Length: 348
Image 1 (cartoon, rainbow, N blue to C red):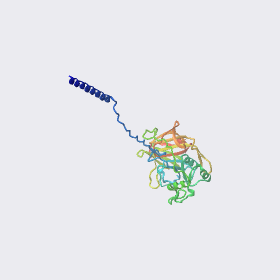
Image 2 (image 1 turned 60 degrees about the vertical axis):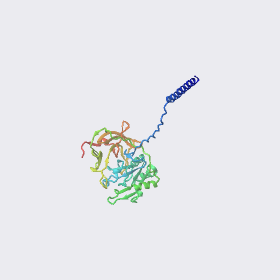
Image 3 (image 1 turned 120 degrees about the vertical axis):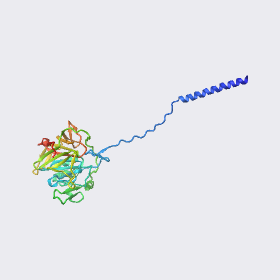
Image 4 (image 1 turned 120 degrees about the horizontal axis):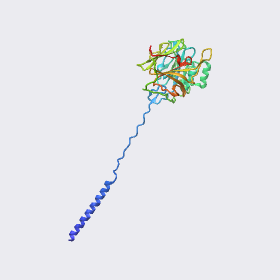
């Protein structure tokens, strides 16, 4: 009996221990499962798209090279010019008489040389300074040269470097004053020697692409600056740009006949006043006014104003975006103003 009692007690102890172990196992089972640590991949930095400030076209890196503005001759004996197909923007304004001169801005596409180059006028170098560019010209009346030397703009005058083969060179196929060309390597060299900054920060203009442009369809645009000079633009649907003409002759590169094709053409009217017997002018490039904007074969009646010093089209006070690409601005007298711009749907 004692043995049986002992065995019975052992069985009770064994059962109790088994229950305790099962409880312990249950407790472990009821614990929250261990979460695996999730290692987050570092977020990739957002890619920054760099664009050229005056064209809106994509750049490989941040654009910091300073704009160069060259004063170009537009006399019939200076046509066709060299370098215009590389210009981001061209601003065309009357000088003396009814012949214009061209202020060509270069930043995104730098040519080897540009010309023919002519003498300075205040409204041209004031625009250059407002755009924060270096002004390249050849000659100036003494009072104008004094303005530049006194700091109205950072400029390089070919009069001091005429045919030095570094900043300027004379061609043999044209006669003076229609044969002076500036060399871009020399521009940077001389600008650095003068202590001019070769880098600058620019806020891009407003651009829009792949949208339906408002306005009336117009294929042919013409304006007569006078009895002896006219400018016209014909929209090329295949090239999606405007071919330019001076006195009916297409504007091309002198060396290889590359046509000048433009994505934006802007006519702005401004007050012109003749101030001396030579026929020099003062032109109001600050007050704004009526304008015509040509894009994608359509024309819009807009206003123009200076925004941070730069000429832009506006509607109801808001900027009208440019189409990415090259721009040509024609500054015309308020008489006849934009009403004197002839618009036609017939391409010549």
